[in-house]
Image (cartoon, one colour):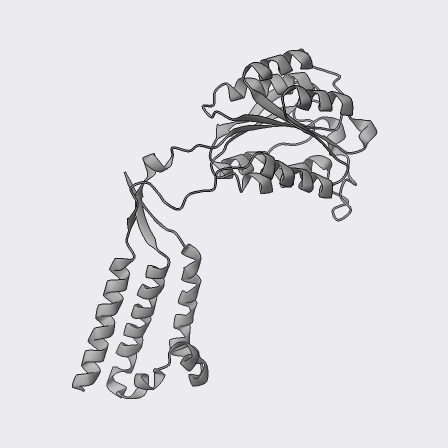
Length: 301
């Protein structure tokens, strides 16, 4: 199935310059259209020539935007990682004051914002989200659709899974979610501000399952250092060949995710679509033909 897109859609902003053909003072027009004197040379052709110049300019901009057609099915064969965020949504995550700039924002809200920014750059990763409190559940299944992940993140709130902290249940749910993925590299990013005090799955059992599947578990303790079990988080990360982080405020949290982006880099989205066909020659050729037509008409006149 063929699909159509532009590789550089932002180029279309230059179409606004067409307005200058009709509205801008002559001195400004001359910056973009050096031969504006031709517009008024033949009064009977003023409107027609302006229209042709506008069309030529629009076609050239379209060519610069690089229109292409490609095979969507083949372009979906991605080679990124399977990544599952395991987020603590217990009552303590509703505490405010975690950010100096956003005093009224809760830790959970700020965490969601950082994750939203993080996943925007994970072009080829398969991302899922598990939330835990008194119990745990998969709120976002593994997907390449980052817009859907961001959309579903907005619906998560503090206490959505209860007020306690079931870290083991959260990890077990993430491991089960990752079993459904096909990527060779599998990663869990656990974020919590508390101690394990709930759930039916022992953390050590979840770690054993993760190690069997070669899953790395990066751990992040957020908030006051006395608020979470740093030794436990360090052990989880060490046992799965990952790393443990501490983020006492939102700036440190952003720095952690920036480091994670370098530790677990996503494949850069390739501009070389499979079965890609360059289509810029069509608008470019049409623009040249129209320009030759105008030049030839002036020569006759």
